[in-house]
Length: 196
Image (cartoon, rainbow, N blue to C red; front, side):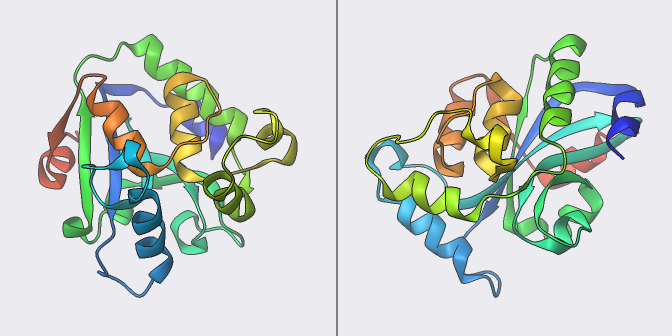
């Protein structure tokens, strides 16, 4: 699957960020706990209550999302981790998602992100990293540890794709970060309509 993604043609010069809204909409209490806990940090005050993030690209006319997920079903894998999923499959419940769109991406920038996704492809989901990154008061480990362990979580994945930096960051903080970097709100319906 990964090599196939590099062969696909970029059909829209935009990147879509998708945030899973956490307000007891499903049976997964972990989503609500993550959104609540990270919402206590002052840097996240006033952000959307979200627990999960995906980064999307228009390839061969289809909107594809990439991230890390603990849910095995999201990536059709035996274990959770990084991988690709189509917008149709991921956005089955559009009311549970908040989308943001970049309005000025070059093909080179998008290709760079696709190359970065290849470096993280098939990493396992870093459950321990999620807990440690948001419980400890300072960074105790080197930033390259995720690459050595080949484990990563969603917002760290999306931040790496976007910036090339492995950083401890929550989906809530990422939502503020991207809005400060020229992204705009877009509806699920509008994003799906951009597919060719």
